[in-house]
Amino acid sequence: MKRLSVLVVQATIILLFTQPGFSQSSEELKYLKEEIKALKEGQRAIRNDLREIKSLLRARRTPPVFKEAVISIDGDPFKGDKDARLALIEFSDYQ
Image 1 (tube, rainbow, N blue to C red):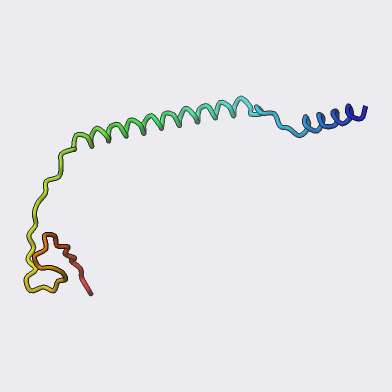
Image 2 (image 1 turned 180 degrees about the vertical axis):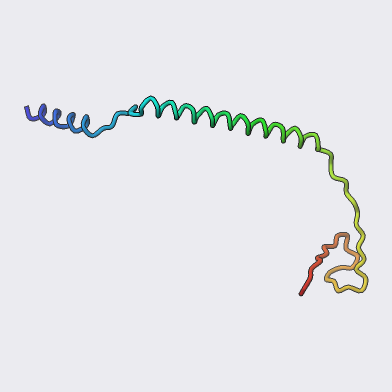
């Protein structure tokens, strides 16, 4: 008898303090469906934009043309080997 009363009390507590899963009204559900539809349309638009960007980038896949630049540093202060194959030159303004 004691077990039965404990089960009844537990069942009552569970039923009173749980909220129903589908408590939204039909208007709220309709609004949520419209929001989901708008998000899906936005995703489709973004996907189409990405496809277009990718196609434009594929069309421009020509390798960049290397242009050799010769800069004279005669008489300017420098560090390192004068006959180095690669020189990093920093142009800065100390004002």
